[in-house]
Figure 1 (cartoon, rainbow, N blue to C red):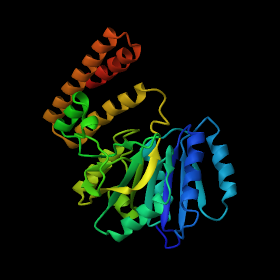
Figure 2 (figure 1 turned 30 degrees about the horizontal axis):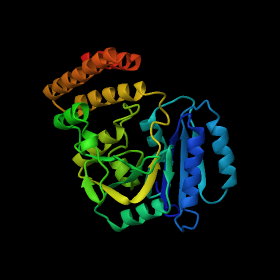
Figure 3 (figure 1 turned 90 degrees about the vertical axis):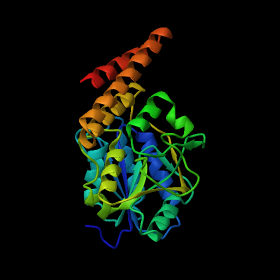
Figure 4 (figure 1 turned 135 degrees about the vertical axis):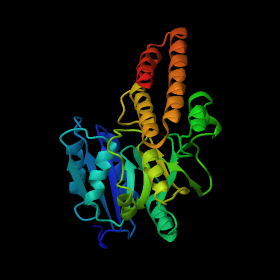
Length: 301
């Protein structure tokens, strides 16, 4: 149960991201250095083999009192969803801030976001402004993946035109925000049972916020708290994210949509894979040929 002694629990899942995790922790403590906010940090390490645990423990020794840092060391990589759920269970804060390990907090972004969230009781989940390393906006607010949105994402460069994901300049109500930086209350998280642990990585926040909306909870995007999101720090290469997105979309449609909608989704995923394989042969890209051959096989199942 959440206690009054902790206002905010910050949850970070780490997997072979030693340097970025430490940079993330440093940016948090720097951002909240002069804040009166009572907070804790919970780091869940999914069996990293790069010395992450040792470095996190060293970092913890430097901050014995504020913030209090909990370290959960898993014996295997249990995935992003399950690790977050694991952390929230022991969180003492009334509010929960989920941060990727490759996030860098800018200025007073955490306190700014937290104060805004508390002042607006009609908001249940809140996402912030994410920036790329070069400080350009990173698309992190989006509509749910209807078939039209999927088509735009696969074939029309939907993010580029703002048809799918975008980075608004005003506070807006939205369908979903990036799980790289998301603020909510522990009671809301528990009401919808957190992340679906059947999703190992990618599409997890979409599923959770879809269920939140069905439960009467809403999601907002707040652009005045800024965070740098380095992106894909735990993924080796481009193939893995693409396969996981394919897998996540198929799982999401099986769970939430009709058999006909799932059939249409799989047709679009197959067409995307075939087109990418053809391009791979034209430009002699082994990456495209191998990645989308695997993706095509998945979409045919």
